[in-house]
Length: 394
Ligand SMILES: *Cc1c(COP(=O)(O)O)cnc(C)c1O
Image (cartoon, rainbow, N blue to C red; front, side):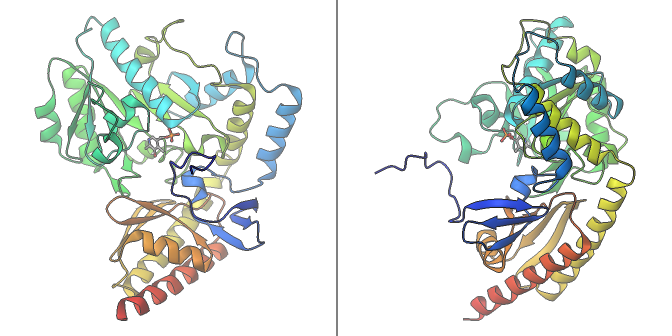
């Protein structure tokens, strides 16, 4: 018989009761160090007083009113994103997939408004992940996510990641834009080369295409800057955010330059829940923390410390780990044994992590992680490697 809760996830047999900082406590009272952060989402860890207080205070005032009315909390949050980024205007919604849907619609509509209604196709990349709606599994392009769901939604052309000449070869009279993750997260913490990003920008300018960054996973301080694109000198025309934006409260955003944002006139696009008072209270609280003086500097110091520890771990346990990937606290360990086995063993040691493509184990602690907690995680990874080495020897 089927479970009452639809069985579309393969869940670990643990249920968490509560959390505090970087720690989660299960219903048996066992504690786990959370280096998954709900897949790069619980950016401030668990029970962060500023976030909790902001959500509680807003919930007591009003939870939902709808986008039929002005939304001061959303106006404030949008202005802060505009001040802190390339963007001129912001649309709020509820998930990464929804933000990417909006991104694709905005690119197509802006091309149409510019006199090119034939420009509807988006160039995407092998190894990408853009979400689970019908259009976004087509933008993702991974056969694993498409199987059984019928014909792909038309309009997405895939080329190899980090290969500019393949991108240029794929451009046709129907191309509207390019959608890329500055660092592929689900794909295995694969970073776009700086030269590749510059080439994409120049190519978009040359052909009149829009450059879209999916920063659903890389954004909101995860890489050590507010947005990953800020490590380069390349700016997109439009960008999606989700995961860390609400510190675990469901929320997403589409940030755009004026030409793209203007395409979404009243009636052309919308969402019932998006940018509501509660979500925006969470978003504003998260930004208060991340943009506070010294927060990202401090995080980058801890991230460098963690990375050095991981490099040493790989040097000690070459039969289990082969490479450290990533930037800031978007880190990956390429594994020499199945990453699922490493993840399960690490969980036994008390460390939560997330599997990714290319047999990589993602380490995505909350941005408030301390050096002492990194030491604990490194010790647990050491024990994990020792246990797996003993299994290999058997
Ligand atoms: C998680 C993710 C998405 C999808 O976000 P949902 O909120 O699950 O819809 C899209 N793009 C990237 C890069 C992601 O990591």
